[in-house]
Amino acid sequence: MGPRVLFHVQYLLGIGHLQRSLRIAEALVEADVAVTLVQGGPPIPEVARARGIDIVQLPPIRARDATFALVDETGAPVDDNLRTARRAALLDAFAAARPDAVVVEGFPFARRAFRFELEPLVAAARAAGTPVICSVRDIPTVRGDPARLAEIVARVRNDFAAVLVHGDAAFIPFDAAFPAAPQIADRLHYTGYVVSAPPDLEPADDEPSGEVLVSVGGGATGRALLDAALAARRGGCLAGRGWRILAGASLSDAQLGEIRRAAPDGVVVERFRRDFAALLRCCHVSVSQAGYNTVLDVLAARARAVLVPFAAERETEQLIRAEHLAARGVATVVREDKLTPLALAAAIERAAVSEPPPIVLDIGGARRSAALIAGLAGA
Image (cartoon, rainbow, N blue to C red; front, side, top):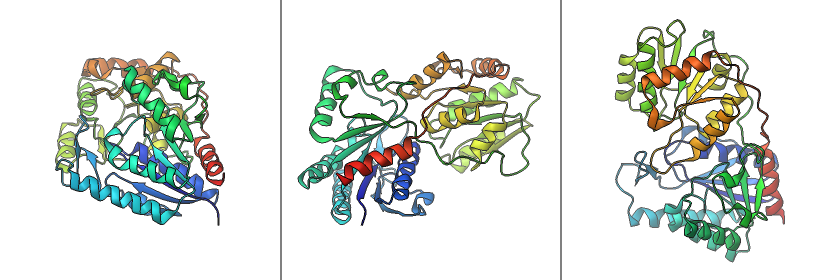
């Protein structure tokens, strides 16, 4: 029997963290590693069908909105009963899986609100002599105060065998967002970016090319961008081209109806498209936020891009990523606090006449992560 891995992932607003973790889990299965993936966000039907991965669903917790207030599946604030139930379920999953390695997505750089279950998991792993590995995206969102940085460094040095950074140091070094990175340099491993399977080169049907493609991921934080895009189009921005709005799966039917009623002729409004990556290859301009997965799809498609990075509360991840791309001439950026229909229209029109230069990124993150995890599990 090959090694066994327990992988914990908690997603709150979108599902980008889950998608990245699933891709790594799939690469582990391809490498003959048994994977138990414990997910803490709302159930996703596609995950339940993940082949070869044992899925454990914790009682779900999500973020109510961009303030990241935590609520249960009914929308009620998280209480101690729910915390106790989740902690017990997670420790039961650990005991049942008997893993040779534990992978925790985000923590200790993020997910501090879930210490009630993650600290007991780490303690159980250490008591069993099981290495604990942190899986973290290229840009963590971390407060820069010295006490918080010192806390993270101490926890990594005491509890974690490795920190897998799913990025490319030649593009965005980890210390761009985590200045204490040199203090854990012996634990850091850049894996490259984790991308999904290669998309089809053409859309699934005969959709027209050369459109303006506006997308907001799951849609939980993208309403302002959608409203500004529709207002820009009503004001005449690239009115000679077709527009497609992908409003996101998380919008209610009522919200989707509002957007469709606000759309002028020539604008198609849909929740999502499974062939999104292929649509990017055919579009004239992509307008989106600057999340990890979306940016990778945009770069792979060599699309002319306008990025409006999500920046509510203390979020800086998307802004850092967008500004690095803008500095390389790959994207036009509109800061969220400067977003107006006129500003967005001007950015779209600038992007429409640009030719973004190619950018080479290390995208071998899934397999390299799997190899590192399997090596630690085998050791």
